[in-house]
Length: 518
Ligand code: ADP
Ligand code: ZN
Image 1 (tube, rainbow, N blue to C red):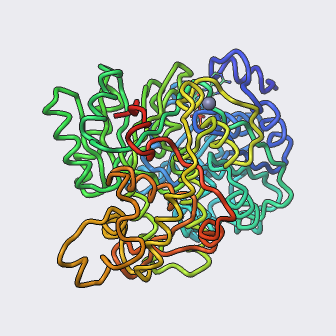
Image 2 (tube, rainbow, N blue to C red; image 1 turned 180 degrees about the vertical axis):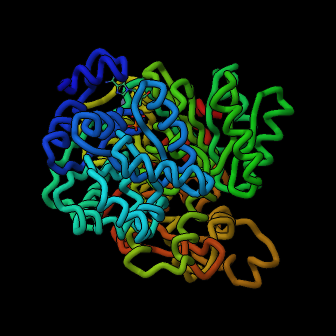
């Protein structure tokens, strides 16, 4: 019988295991359960492929990604492994052939979509099969707090009940503690050994800037990445289409990808991105899960992503070949308002809204951070990273902060005096003392805060409001259109008990520096 290392070398052609692969392979090959948290590109596949080859019987791999199954199976067959998949893309004839091979014990690995696995027919097939192990890929899909939630994943606990002697390995690149706990509970993995790899991606440089002219900022960013493959994420389909068109006009090989395009176009664009050199994919989050393209040189975000996990997963698609890559993001006040409104207006239960708000806050804290980005990013995943990294934007050019306690007090009291019923646009006009008929109709020109902030221009005030939202000193109300409200912490600032330090970009013009990202 060959050892794990021999299989790694002879079948997969690699000389050595990476990180914790060997320990995971040993655990599962010995019949134990495992929960594997490893960043995208870390090498999760071998953690179940090799044990499946070491053990008697067929390894059953549950994966939500039909598109990826075929690629994986092709690659395995290429390496001489008897692999197959079962999903809705196969014709009846082919399905029967796969089932026959499964029952005949001819398969080393079988990939199957969760909804297929859970059918009575398939489960009874499995009962007549020698199963080497169950691998549950993308295990975070059990979490209803994440954006990849798949209800069928919750039913996978049945594997533990019906096949209690078969080892199970659950794998994911989403590592926050809440998701981890949920996987353990939902999949009944209390006995599983947990393997948590470092999520640091040292070859990725992180940069975050303020959006003032997205088109121009993106063009300048792409100038530094001519001829390289990359992904540009946008929040809406419309913005994807517009951005892709603008890039094409500017001579960039850019393609759009979002759920509103027909299946054929999406597949064709994805193929071009994978096969051709230097294609820029402009996409919504619909694009990327399971995309294995090693030489993606950059991932750009033109809007705030939905959460830190989302951001990490999306940026993690850059630089899987370990060569230098860049994660670049621009965002603005409107993102913060839109996101808080989306949360407030959603139909979710309060508990879920609270969690989503926390997720937004931790993302904003990252975006507004003045210390090493990598430290902030990794600490969000519970990792104790000893930075600073020395090559993120904040390390290379430490952002200057200033004592903005007085402007913050002015801003908060203007929100309060106008009865917490207006958005930032109007409140900024109050602060700057902009006269208008509406202003006098509302009587806001008689407020004590009217004109107290005339020393700062609109842009600076917007920055102050963005940062106050980001640090939780203001929140956007659900009912109005971005109506601002005070929070519990606002009082400490208003009473002078707490000072506020903000990034330089909001500082009054005389002393402000030119921003590097614009
Ligand atoms: P994940 O599923 O964690 O995103 P994969 O299993 O797709 O990662 O592996 C990412 C890449 O790393 C693949 O191209 C894979 O072949 C390669 N890889 C994995 N393990 C090793 C290893 N021990 N040595 C060299 N390359 C490896
Ligand atoms: Zn750093």
